[in-house]
Length: 436
Ligand code: SF4
Image (tube, rainbow, N blue to C red; front, side, top):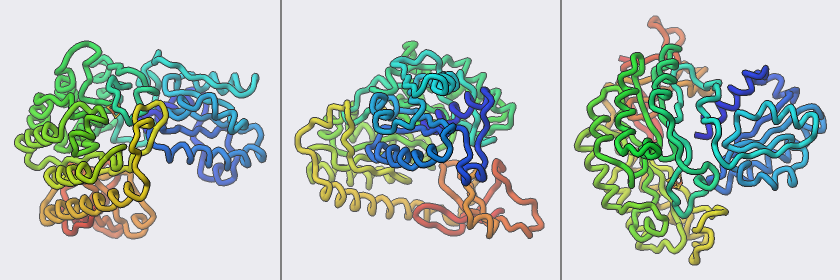
């Protein structure tokens, strides 16, 4: 969602005459505007913001006409503090007023530093134009905000209640993207599968998936992130019945212990989570499931942690983003007694990380010899340029590197191309494939 907000910030600025700075002008620090889009989900991001702002003080000294704008969730939260701590910042804006950024910059030029955040969304982010980071794969926000109040999460305090976008507006946006050559869409929502809550339609998300699936030219549909408590079986049915809805799902588990899930106020049990996975796998045996897990939530006992390890073993996740619990302001869990010491969190993190790495490697090894359809991505590294190696994603979103030598007599693959490749090697974080 934050990445997509950055695309919207770039869009609104471009509409107002700005363009992206070249690498050269960045190196020489000759730019007119520096925008930082922040995230408040984890504590680490806050320390990074103030570190980055410290560096920018020097830029500003050398180039006093350069403006600095700080937006996003953390800016929304720290609105009063940022300019106090970094008085060289020109504009602080929130998640609900991206569209106002050019006016705020102008105002700050004339009247000095400006802090402006809105508590409520007045313009849906998708009504603001975007400069998209990819020409063939697009993120599309279908809802913003969240009505849940998970006790560790700061998001609802900053992004507000769930707001659902009109279904026909969403499909119009995707039709436009398809006409421009986009073949893959990622539907985004803080709680993507509760889409429709605002207009009281429990099955709106699966209806939307069907509608998007019917759009000509869209070959791959993904969505992020569904919440287990609101997951209804119709979603799995539509996924299984449509070839262009990918057999991959990222569904946060957070903990495998029912008592911790209750303290987190997640609204499901470990067995309900497993029941959803069983249903998805019964309908799509090759589905890849990824997840998020928080380690060291207050009062997590060794038995709670073992319960999480058990679910991870049973769930056979393709991969998991594992985080140490990070107390966030405005959330109830920050005041919970029994906060765990860092060494306990770190030891549990390492154990779970190693367990998941082993599972991922086994799942990746099982792909060797299979021929899969991949979409070549924009993820190009330095090494890739030398060897001609390119990166791609299969339908399950597994990363596959493919040799693509410049000298090849065959036509070279380019980002956005689809190809069939046979998997030849497996590593914990990627596969190696050869073109068929
Ligand atoms: S579902 Fe929970 S974790 Fe996800 S955004 Fe809402 S409150 Fe945060």
